[in-house]
Image (cartoon, rainbow, N blue to C red; front, side, top):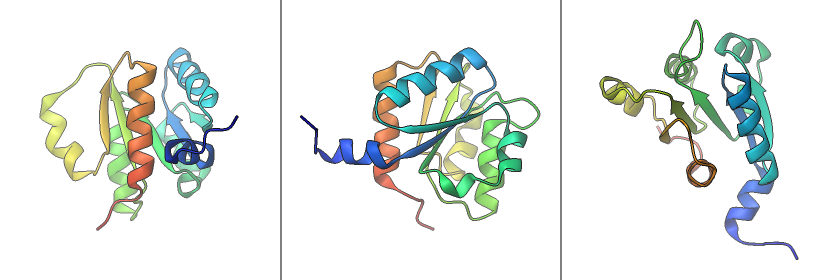
Length: 136
């Protein structure tokens, strides 16, 4: 029996990009999201992601704050400067309150502290995808 609720329709159509430099965390996120019907692609760095020229093909980004060379927040700021309006969820190992104003300005849909509980991640992701692109 298939679930035809709005959230299942969102899931089955959603392409998610995970940007996480810790391979174990990235693999775990990919498994959780894949098991819940999301089409998931992963990248280990912002540079690798930007070089792929695929940002517009995803419905939502899940980005680690602590990416090497360019932080997850810096990546989102660069994308926003290029008129990228898709939602983003920021995950971080150590919440940093001083970054909250920048996070708000970057239009990040949700921030989650690691380790992220699967239910919390799925809820944040569904809300972000349902909300759709930023309105400018």
